[in-house]
Each structure stands twice: as C-alpha cells, then as structure tokens.
Length: 204
Image 1: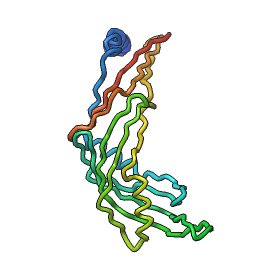
Image 2 (image 1 turned 180 degrees about the horizontal axis):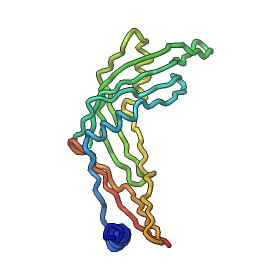
Image 3 (image 1 turned 30 degrees about the vertical axis):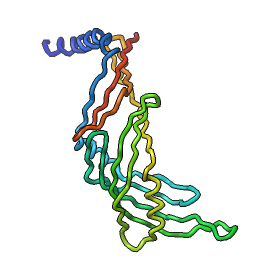
Image 4 (image 1 turned 60 degrees about the vertical axis):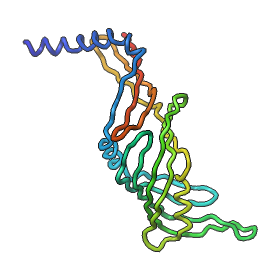
C-alpha cells in the first residue's frame, strides 16, 4: 500500500516542483557541463560520417573516419582527423573541354585546431578550423588530398543547435512541456558548457 501511494504521489510532487519553479526558470539558465571524454566517446560512436561532394573541383564521397586526441581549451578544440575519399574525381579543364580525372580512393590524416563561436541569433555553433600536418597514406594523388582538406581548412563550419527536442510528460490529466533554447556555448579546458534557457508550459 505504501509503495502504491508513493507511486501516485510522485507525479503530483514533480508537477508542483516544476510549476512553482517555472517562474524563476523563465529568467535563469540551466548549465549543462559535458566532459571532454563524454563528447569524444559520442563522436567516436557516431563515426564514420559520410557526405557526398559534387563541386566544380572534386566529386566523390568524403567521410570522417576517425577523430583522435580531442582536446578542449579556452574557446578552442584540437584533434587528429582521419579522412577518406571514395570514388574521387578531379574536375579540370583542357582548353575548352571539361575533364574528370578518376583518382579512386584517398586516405589521409591531419591535425586541426578550431576556434569556436556561438551565434545566438541563428542558434548555431561555428567552428573555424585550421589544418596542419597533412599525411597521405599510400600513393594517392597529392592534389586530391589538398582539395579534400581545403573543404575544412580556414572555413566556418556551422553546427545548428535549434532542434532540441522538448521534454514532455503527462502528470495526471495535464501535460507538462519543457522547451529549452541554447543561450550560449562555451569551450573550457576539459569540458563543454551549454547554457540552456527553459520555458515551461502546462496544458490540460
């Protein structure tokens, strides 16, 4: 009987807690601090990340296959990236003729150091990487490797953060919805800090 009563009271207690605190949440942010090791593990489990490339210079499928030695410092992150290209072609011209030169597969690694900046208006985290220490593996064409790295080097890479799923729970006959908006993202040594602004609504 006691367990049954506690199970019935728990949703009510949660509802009261959220409802009473929603007024202060409207003006205060929640800090989500993610250790560097957790992010490195999440990235490792999500790889490889492949994306087709079809531009005026190169075509093929490029994939980030490994990210090693991920390190956070003040507003900067660094890592060692392994990149692969499959069915790669270089688009060039000979006189008035457009020519595609088949290169095949390319594997290379490079070091990257990226500064970070959060654009609150667009809710986008911007990474600006600078590449160094390019190492091609095997006897691949050096030009295609340079073109592949150029897609990342000294370019702003946007990471949208405006698609966070709301927290939705039913409490009795009411529905509690907590939406969160990213107010800021700060990179510190060993951790990533995300500041969230929650907005709570309750409906019947």
